[in-house]
Picture (cartoon, rainbow, N blue to C red):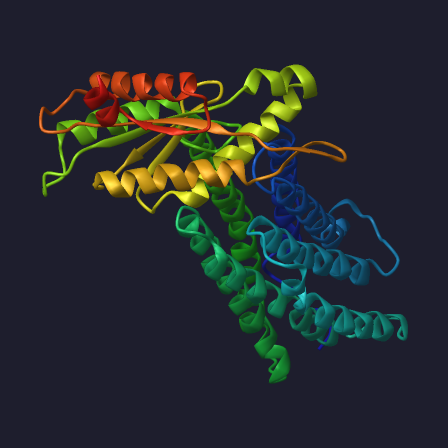
Length: 400
């Protein structure tokens, strides 16, 4: 089959795809510049480069619109499009944090592309049908692999836009295959070939915009998650912040456990924390805070809420628990912190201790403010009793 003369102007379609791909590339690069603080934002850079290559390929296909003739232009255009689609797979896997080995279809595509180059360079005018079949053999599997990555690996928050983008990838792979059918069966029906070519280019045109919209949709989801995380979490330790702990405590007291269990609160404070900052500096202090937070999180039970509510002060809000369970948990937290070495400088480790105060709502149904005041009084007693110990407000009240 020789290059057909199309009543439908495919050159215009190539040009439209080239301009759309260029606009998409610039859009991705622009968002990469302003969102480089997001998780794996460098995937946008890969997407931008991928669509830049696609733009080059499609514009070269349409080069005769300005009377430009490039030696081996068809081959160069095909290779640019192939490279752009391969880079799209890399960008997708990078976006979802998939390992590099997930890009293995690119190795197969490279082998086929090498054969394409060898064939094209061996002939003054390569046969259009051969170049078309080879191009489909390279791009089809890569497009399907990208669609599968989008379909399978997106988490729940990114799934709707990712799967929409996957569907368009599958549609483009199908139209590429459809375009190759007239060549494979050696039909002379040029109308079918022209229609399939136009459909494939229209789907490719739509795919560029769908990918852009879907990726921006996913970026918006990441921004939402980031804002929620900042609103609810302490940035240094990753624990809940003071606002979240106050809201949770107030709600638990307002809607007590259906079995009538107490709301239990543990306040804890790092002993002599100021000395750490004074001797080793604030980075060392941050390391101590992060380590203490990590050990608390590893020691408490599922369902217990942990937060950082002050400079070196932490809070544990427990579900229903007997006094024995509370005392055991508080002691395990205390001993876990005491036993943990913390690197504060190269070659230097320290161990810190904590003091803890416990309180519970009890039969009187104490308010949240009362519960905090009682835990704070118990913590104060632990500090003044020698530190590195647990004091329960109930025992403190009995002793008084």
